[in-house]
Image (cartoon, rainbow, N blue to C red; front, side):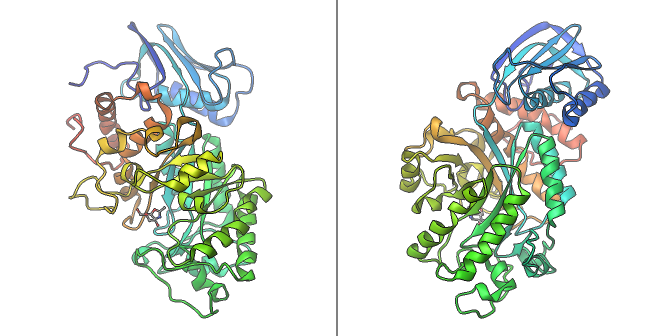
Length: 472
Ligand code: NGO
C-alpha cells in the first residue's frame, strides 16, 4: 500500500540516513526551490552561506560528508542544506526537489547523505542514432535528479562517427552525414563547439562527461571515411545494420597510430574530465596478438595527455597501465581477465548487461530494445549488488556502476526515455545508497511517485506492471 502522506525518506536514491520529525512540515514555494537551484548552478556560493528565500545553502566541512555528501534539515521555520563542496549542495537541492514535488510541503527532519560510489554513470549511444545537443542536455536534466554524476557518450561505431576531429574532416562529413546510423535513420554529429557546450552544461550540474571512441573494433564508419586505414587500402562499404565484430583498425600499420593519436589528443584537449573511454569491445575480427599489440601502443596515450583510460572489460587481455579502469558489461558471472586486473590494482565499473543495459526489453512485448542478454524488468535492474557479482571484484575495487543505453532500436527522445525510466533510477540507487539501505519493496513504492511527475513533465516511461502506479 502506498502511504497517504509524504515521508522524508521518499527519495531516489534512498538517502544514507533519514531521521524524520513527523510532527513537522514546512511549505516552500516553487520559486524558492528554483532560486536554490540557481544559486548552486551559478556558482554564487563560494565559502559564505547563501540565503534563497526559505532555503539556506551553507558550505561547511563540519559534517565530514565528503565531496558529494550533504546534510538537509527541514524544520517548522525553514530548510538548511549544508555540504563541504558545491556538488553536495547540488545533490541536496535535488533531494529537496523530489520532496517538494506536487504541493511543496516538505516533511520535517534531517537527512544525512553521501554516495556509496564515486562513479554513477549513464551512457548514451550517439553512433547508432544521433541525438542533438539540446536532446542530450534535456536527457541530462532528467538523469541528475537521480544523482547520476557521469555521462558517457558513445561517439563512434560501425554505423556513424559523431565528433568533429580537425584534420580528419571526412569522419563527420561522411560518418555523420545523411544515411548514417542504424537503418540510416540517425544522421548528425557534434562539432567541437557543440561538444564543449555539452561538457560545460554537464559540469555546471556536477556531471563529468566521459567520451568514448571505440577501437580497434566498431570502426567501420572511420574505415569508410578513410580507406587508407583499411588493411589493403581499399574502400569498404558503409553499414547501417546492427551486426558487430566485423571491422578493425590494423595493428601493423603506422597510419593507424597517427590517426588514433590525433583523435585521442583532440579528445583529451576537449575534455576537462579525467577519463577517456577507448572501447575495446567485441574485436572479433582482430587477432588476439594484434589486439594486444594495438592496446600496448594505445592504452598509454590517455596518460600521456593527463587522462585515465577506461575500456570495456575485454581490454583486460592487454597490459593495463596504472589508473586504467575496466568496465564490465557481459552477463556472465565469471571473468578471469577482470579478476586479474583487480588483483593488479585496477578498478572496475560494473555494467552487466542482464542488469544495467537500458536497451534490453522490459518484457517480451516491449516494442523497443534488444534481448540478447535476456529481458530486464525493473526488479532485475534493482535487485543485485555490484560487489557480489564477479569473483574478485570487491567493494574496494569498484569505482562504481553505470547504465548503458545503446541506440540500435531508438529513433527519438521519447524512445530514450521509455527505456530509461523507471530502470535508470534503480541503477542510480545501487550506485548511491548503502547496501543495507536498499530494499525492493521500498523502491517499488518510491518509484511509483514518479509516474505522475513524469507525466506532468511529458516524460515517456514504461508503466511496469511490477509497480503500483497511482491511477492517472
Ligand atoms: C554490446 C556491444 C554494443 C551493442 C550492445 C547492445 C558492448 C560493450 N558492445 O555491448 O556494440 O550496441 O551490446 O546491447
